[in-house]
Length: 289
Ligand SMILES: Nc1nc(=O)c2c([nH]1)NC[C@@H]1CN(c3ccc(C(=O)N[C@@H](CCC(=O)O)C(=O)O)cc3)C=[N+]21
Image (spheres, helix red, strand yellow):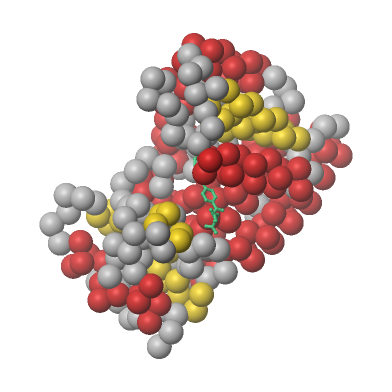
């Protein structure tokens, strides 16, 4: 059996279309376009690529893009002062500070400075708390994109066994919270888990977010399970996921790398920006967005 390939790129394109429609409705109702500010510190080439593709997607969706490029030796106080200005700027609905930041800057201090209602990455502890307690907030883009792909395949997630591999604040923890909210039975496994294979073997849904190329072995996958590969690892063999490619012979459905979760992350960032804009302006937004 060969798994159905989950076309994240195509799904992301339809989501970006719906975002563009919602952005146009917002512009009509609010008299201005939704605005996204992206802050990049330093010149890491991979980060520059993402910032550029975010800017392009923002404009293509009919939104305003504000790019702030700061030199790698910028002081923490100066970066925080920029965040303060963006918080106070009414044309800015979303603020994304590209991570990782240089070592001399305390990431926590910067992230917690962002107005939670403009935190389109969903990284602020206030948004983490809202997600954990079921309040309306902004949800991290990558796990929300994974959930959208999963809901497309499993309209009824309730009762399914889900195993999340990895416990980062950016992917693993919010992914587990989202699946729990959907009434999955959720297990998070991590570097200190005693029998990772034993847990993964039982899963109807596997979300791999460990950052180790090819970590998840085909023998771990229950035949027919849905596998979401969040890994984006640059190796000599090119871009590879956290899941061994052999898993596609066992799984029922699986995301490719590239073309799976990655494109969803950017599309959900666009989605979060329109949602943040609508909430801030007190205008309606497509609830299915
Ligand atoms: N505050 C913050 N928020 C982020 O969301 C954030 C960040 N910092 N720092 C960097 C990472 C990385 N990231 C990606 C987004 C899209 C693709 C993506 O679209 N990838 C394509 C392939 C692109 C390629 O070929 O390199 C794919 O998987 O098909 C990848 C990576 C967002 N990040």
